Length: 190
Image (tube, rainbow, N blue to C red; front, side):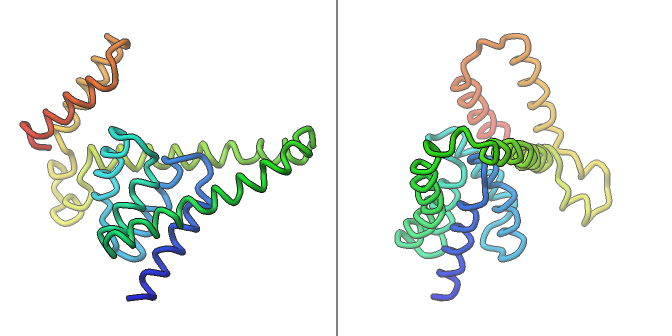
């Protein structure tokens, strides 16, 4: 039990240290944890992204708190959250002191230039993963082999309708879209 607790803290610490680029950049790390340890499902990640995007707070922090709490109660939630946030606090404290001194350094600029494509790659990977999980049921397709089981038709129609609506009326407030989506999810049952 204590080994799993420490492993969870380590994994979230590692995620916080290397998920450069914010909340969406944590998704590949969360996916790896899901596959490697089975602490939560890939579906849980999709659900948590939806919850995180509709509530304050970054995805990684919400997911760490949720998983830690589910596995070890309140103490686990706090430990996982602190484990995820600690590297950022440490790095920010170090960088804040050094950045002023080295902000015009070509090496520092080169490091940040090199990190940008990696961050974009992490975020794109997360977006593609969420897209696939939300609109396609790959696991069901693998078990049945039926192409009709691959597609989540209600979700695809809803996605296309929202995309068209947002293109047609780009000034619609995101809160309205989130609220309508939640209600449709309840009543239509995705």
